[in-house]
Structure formats: C-alpha cells, structure tokens
Image (tube, rainbow, N blue to C red; front, top):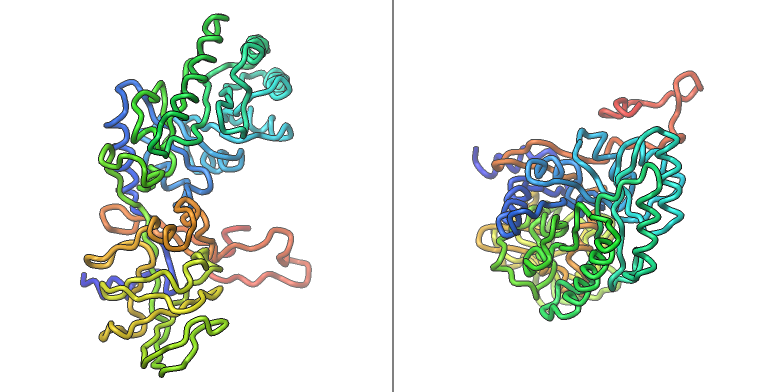
Length: 420
C-alpha cells in the first residue's frame, strides 16, 4: 500500500500518537542484555506508562520482566483488570483506606513506618492472608522512606514479626544517577548497603534488593543487585545527556503526527497568532496545524520549535494556541492541506526528538510525553501495523448522564453504550 494511501486511511484526522511496541520490547531486551546475569527487571509503567499507555506497554514487556511499578493503587488495579498477573509494586504512599483492596489484590505496597505495617498486618489477618511489602529507604531524595539508622533496623525487626507481613524487598531511589559525577550516587548506594548489613546482622534477609533506575541501568553495573527499575529507558529515552548512551542502545517508541488544516499567503507586516509576537517581514505561506497546548504540546515552544512536513523543517510562528499552531511553509513549495505533519518522530532524513523539544523550550523530556493529553489518541503498532488503539472520545461523566426512564434518555453516539 502506498504511503499516501496509508495516510488517507488513518483512523484519526486531527492528531494522534503512535507507540511502537517493538521498540519497547527491544529496549527492555537491550537493558537486560547489559545487566548482570541474576538481575531481573521491574517495568515502571506509572503515569499511564509515561504517557505511552501502561497496559499495552506492560503486555509488550511481560515475558522479560519480573514485576511492574506504579505510583498509585489505582494504576496497579488497572493493570490487573487488563489481565496482568505478575506482581505490582506501588512505589508511592498508599492511603490506609485502600489497605483492604490492596491486600485482597495481592499488590505490593511501599512501607516505611510502624503505623503502615501495623495497619497492613491487621488487614491481612482479618482477611486471612498475607501482604508482601517492600521497605522504602531514604538515602538522599528526602521524599519517602525510613532513614538508614540502627533505630530503623530495629523497627524492621518489629515489622517482620507482625502477623501477615512478608518482607519481600528493600528499595531506595537515586537522586543524581543521571549526572556524569557518580560520587553522590555511590554515597547513596553505600548507605543502602550499610542498612542491608544492619538487617542481616539482625537476622533479617531481604529477598529482592533494588536500587538501580534508568540512569543506573545504563551507567552503573555496581547497582544492579537483584532487580533494576526501568522507567524512562523503557520508552526509548535516556535519563539525561550525561549518561553513556553507547552502553545501551535505546530507540524512542512514540511519534506524534498531525496534518495541515489550512494554508494562507500573507504579506509583509502581517501579524501571526496572539499578541502579534511574530510579524512577517516578507511574503510568506503559513500553515495551520490543529494541535496546541490543550493537547499537551508545550506552549513554551512558541517561536522556537519546528515541525516536519514533506521531510523539511517548518518553524513555529508566534504563540502556540490552545488548539492550533501556525508554521512557516514558505520553503516547502509542494505542501498542501491535509499533508501529514510530524511533531515528534521521523520524516525522511529529519527527526524531532522529545529531547530537542525540551532543550528548545526549557522543559524536561519526561514531562513532555507525560503531558500529552487525552485529546491525543494512541495507536499501538507491531511490525509497522496497528494492533490496537486507545482514545477517550467515548468517555462520559459518571452521575452526569441521563438514565433510561428518567425522562431524559441518553442518546447513543458511536460506542458510548459500552460504558453502561
């Protein structure tokens, strides 16, 4: 099928992101190949897989990982609802009101206080089961976790004796592993290992020790231990430009595509977009792209960013609007309405990376993919062919829709009825 025909048959006409699940799989295999032989991988799929889609990503890497990591209980439950059966660790704090659901579903919580352990123990006993917990240790993030002290080690003894509590893991999080200077990171690792020694001296073994994150997976074999947590690297992005990229070959999984909605010719002195921040100094051809900051495309790229059309760069003119932006296609003589537009990804020999957008806009590349909004559908591919999609166009608000028999029946549009 010709490329133009494929474009014409695209399922979404305004904007969409493609997520290459083959790239995700290749990334996890590349990381595993570089890790120590006995080090397993946790796939971190929090924030809906860093904007890529937690469920499709989790399923793509399932043969290669031992566990999944989320930030919230709700994210963990969503994985289970979609058939994920491997263990899931909630890396953030779980509220005590959620203990029963967490224990029933055998989801692993992060624990670092007596009160947490006591509440989980009581819940497990009441339900006639056990809960597997991972101790959180604070070695330099000042975020969550117990301090690596003798008092904390004594607390762990008390936790281990609580009925229904099974100590499965111990983790900490590196604050600066993505920096070239690894001194602070090694100091964190020393604190972690010192605490492991305190526990061993008290007769408390830790089956799963994990400390390595995406940056350390690339740079620090010393931190492999029993399991490594793959986050941003899973999606084909490096933690920073200071890690040694040649150690692990990653490729971005996401591309963001749109189209030219309309075109116009303007003369010298014509302002473009809000505030007239850009004024043409010569005759120009301007194309409007139907994507804006309401879709999560960074407004701080106004007048700085670019898109790709027919393999050529088209600079963004003036301020990015909520739903649209204007670009300069004066030099792209064969550009026409409905042409494909690449906002992130490749077009011919040209490529726009998330890192480029972050650099130009003064933002953070993690943030860009996480912030791509619900108005952008995701299409999942294998071997270059679509194997699934996700959009929110059929969503409706619970408790705000008309119910049958109330005199205001809800009209059915598309497949809304599947939510009833």
